[in-house]
Length: 411
Image 1 (cartoon, one colour):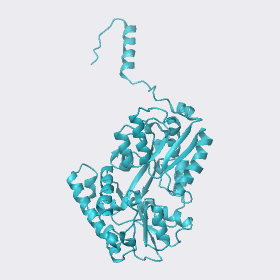
Image 2 (cartoon, one colour):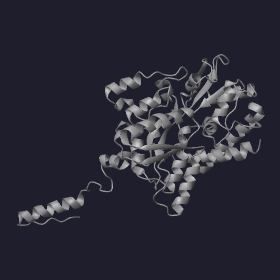
Image 3 (cartoon, rainbow, N blue to C red):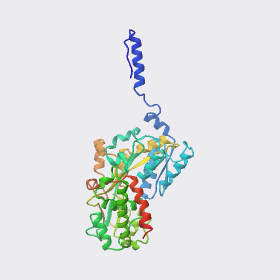
Image 4 (spheres, rainbow, N blue to C red):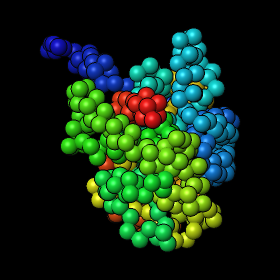
């Protein structure tokens, strides 16, 4: 508590008040330079962006459009580091942290999922918080649960969103006239049509999300997993999930003796007519495959009546990134209306925007509204009215490990 005294010298009292004001009111953070200074520092830097490299459309967007634009606008060289699993990169960061390598890291930017974000946050592997410093964050609706939480883990400025996605089921109208409209109906369909369904083996993310849908189907209330829950409840529902998947295995493609190793393999099986359904954690995947000539034009998508899982995907900057200023500038560009509109184009990627178009100037709102949709892509209204939240990453990890032990190894 500050005690003020009456002072005859008004000049002194004024100086004292000014001094107290300087003490009590935080100064502009010298450690956080203004955005213009960040732009100047970023010019000439090389940003190594490590990310999952399994999508040709994503790779083309990053290496073509984004790399060219950040070079043109900011003088940044963007280099993609494609990996099969970003967990490999996170593991290396853990080792570097333990070895005391706090500067000069080779990884400047990462596309990470909720599971790896939780690991990074727990082990202090991230730079920041930085998200609130990006000017284009004003276009993001941070009130959405899937934005301020990443698989149940509060983001707290340590990640920046750059897109969103939702699971859709993929089928061919020429083969299936009335697809099963719920997880329960799908499980029954699989039992009645042996050999005609497959899902990638977890921990592949697409295969894992199928397991999570079965887990939700067997839960009395999926809202129970969004807050605090008892470990015993998780174990019991997970055991029921494994039991259902074990019983389902003989009815799968090749009798469950093997599983597709990736979504790409599953899509090929679907395109070749070996299975009757595919599914994707990307709502425009089927349209993309139609445009690429892999899927016939009769292919369409749908969501379950009870909804399908949706989430936001983020980028983060490692604690020891050599070019963190450049990484921030790239993260900010990814949120620009220009970059978000390009990414949402079905001819490019068809990814959902991470920004809220309603926060944009009218001319940009119109451009998003008039964006063409692929032939198999559902409307935003249809998708957003059928969204389920991801469970916390603790549940995801538990289910992935449990699937390998109790489904794969006990088949």
